[in-house]
Length: 161
Image 1 (cartoon, helix red, strand yellow):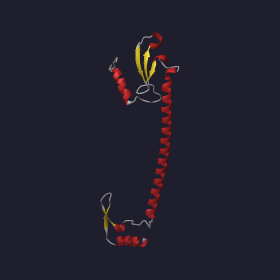
Image 2 (cartoon, helix red, strand yellow):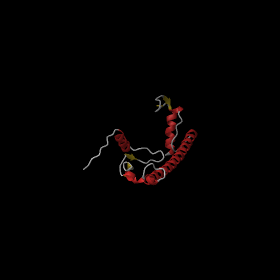
Image 3 (cartoon, one colour):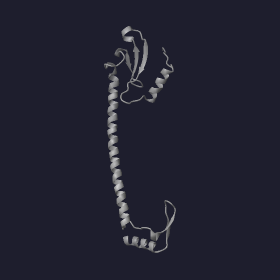
Image 4 (cartoon, one colour):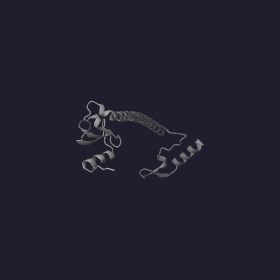
């Protein structure tokens, strides 16, 4: 079978057959082209094949490195989220927490705390705070931003049922 491929290549190169480049559309004579079969690579084709194999090897290494980096980032992010989850629950008992821990009421979702400032010490609420605890570079989620906006626009009401 390999011989029949080579016979076909020889036939094409010995006659005046022409072809068009699939990239640019320009015509060329097949006898001027470096034709080869998969069973019989010429030196130019072997060189190109080796170059492509090397490129493929480099790409595989790059993908492997990116995969390892992504996995490490996922582990770091997961650890940070878990630590943030723990810290938001412990926040009221931490030394630098700016509110009386006894004024805090936990919700944790969509915000962490509603704080009734003054409730524990005076029995009267002087101010109400909606507080969400964030660590690192964490940002408010969309629903938390919406709550913040409602508070800022004074679209907060008290209802008795």
